[in-house]
Length: 252
Image (cartoon, rainbow, N blue to C red; front, side):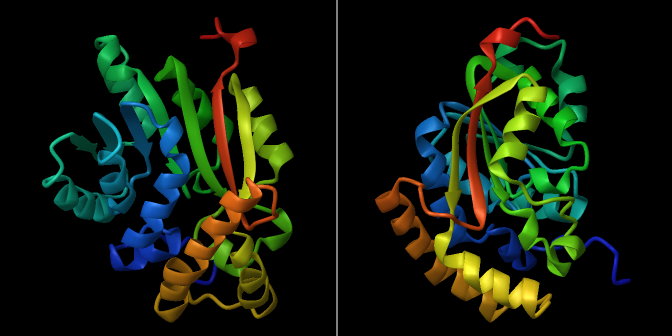
């Protein structure tokens, strides 16, 4: 692999960097639980750890993952989840396949992007597709890395096109016909270690002890601080909830 080649998780073990281990996934889904609704579309489901948590909340979950290696792991997990349907497609392919079907199969109470949107170059086009399969009163739920000044070598190697500010993610959502109704930082505890380890020291280690400490210690403490501060503390990630912009309700 060359220094500039995008690095994506090829297995469940490597997915810990994307907060997609069992412990981290549970925390992130809990933070979004109130907005999930009964029908959920998960975009970029990875190895399925988030999917498993979503299945315990929603009545019907559709999880899409275009990466074949990750989809293989996702398919294994989904065999034990009766209310989950998994597809090896992008959102664009999913929209094309279901656009002519009944509304019940193509409209969702929530569309979930957890550590995914930063990997998509044309994020506005992606969000427009999400809007097309969102129910009229549904929500788009997003977790993304925050602060472009934190962008480091490990972001680039991991295939991150960007890190987001509140202003930038709000602008991209509005371009797509979506209105942000919740914009909060998350992971106050993880911000300084990330700055030191990945920005200043330029480490590229994303598995092993770093991942375990992050998932088992840093994330739980960050969740507690998030709840106590109601999302007012600066953190290294953003939690975003958006709905269809009523002023643009008739957009195609």
